[in-house]
Image: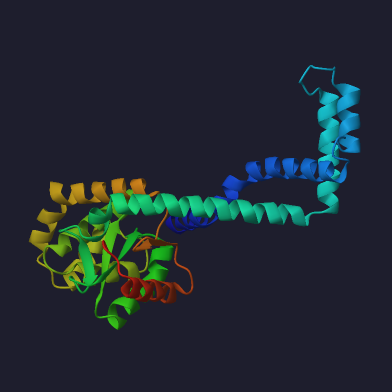
Amino acid sequence: MSSTSRTSFLHTLSEHKVLLLAVPTLLVLAALFVIGRQSEKAPATVAAPDTAQAVSSTTPAGSGQIDPNQKQAIEQIIKDYLVKNPEILVEVQGALEAKLEKEHADRLKVAIAENAKELFRHPNASVAGDPDGDITVVEFFDYNCGYCKRGLDDVAKLVESDPKVRVVFKELPILSKESTEAARVALAAKNQGKYWELHRALLKARGQANEASALKLAEELGLDMEQLKTDMDSDEIKDEIAQSEALAQKMGVNGTPYFLVGDRSIPGAPQNLYEQLSTHVDELRKQGCSFC
């Protein structure tokens, strides 16, 4: 699988994981819903006709078990009802998605609060924009991620249009060892004050980002290459990448790019990424944010 294909898969998984999780639960809920609807139509003291007949004809009194014939009869009732009322599936799916999204948002808020300093105000963070900005945006990314490349212009637009915003970049090289190589070079460039410049150059470049391509871009930017090569192999940089990966795991980040603005998240790179980022920044600026 190519880098672009892997990136697309991770992005799609991130955006649609709620639907993937929902399928088995959806069927169970639909079954319970239909049986409930059938029961509601029957007299209060009598089971729904079809269901009652299935139970009485196939289950020994007091056995408390469902035999294969009864199971088949109930399944047929459910199938017939859903075929006649397919909108119920949409209704149940929508409710389940809303529930899962709320649970995810609640877990995310807790994780952000517990890791706020490392996320937003780490002393050695890779930063663009105002180093002392009032609102911090965090991006987890991979240099070989096609969606990260697509989102670069929106991130740059935010930095250029808002003089008070602060963007922190968390290296998450999950696609290949070449991504890790490029990340090490970029972090080494930070020691020479050129992280943002090399970061943009790597994401704008065509082809695969790796050590060779990153070093070539760094040389074009005028970096001290001898110092860069020494720094990129340091334990400090290896530890920084490992810490970002561990932080992503704590936050439940399983694809790139992934943005955090305060306690709000934006997975992937939607077409209106700049609008979403700037709106969240403006709202948090008005409301106040104790950790971002």
